[in-house]
Length: 222
Image (cartoon, rainbow, N blue to C red; front, side, top):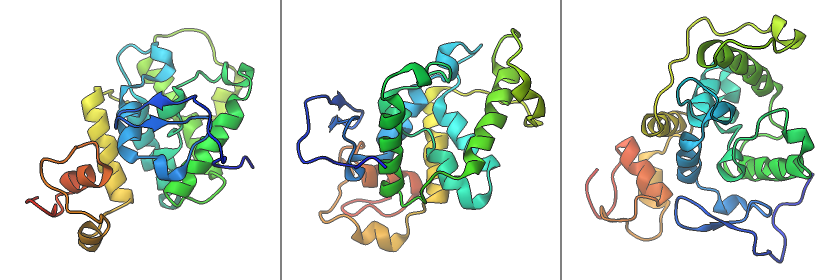
């Protein structure tokens, strides 16, 4: 598998939501932040924007985490995390982009290491993705061409998907993250070396998650 983190980094970085540099071609697990992922995915529209209404990758991911087996739910939420740094590329285009699969795999490996996920990604995630893409076509796209024989065997979700806006999708994603990766009061009191005040930068991952989860914030009140 691709090695994560070379000794020398080139200058190919992007400016991410938290204000930091991120190197998509050389991802480091310690530089991956759930707040950057949640925000970026909430701003990305599925189907390269060709939906009847805005429908985010964040909402898609949260739904995916709810329809896979419980043991795979964390992967369900984070299976599209690389798109926070590479953007959402349509399925037919991905195979034509030189080295895209390698970049995506490197980022997935880094995400797996950062969030302590088993490798490789479980097959249930790919199956759920197929269920969702067909359900999303039914509910969110205008009627059009047949997608082919492979769709015939897909059992779509019984309930319609109701798209929500970016802010709501970001909240949904973070809420689901906190269900699957809960922060204990003990962790809240010990996992940051310096006190965190209420006026701290909300892009700080631990500060933001404490606020979302209602846990005590040192230097202030919940």
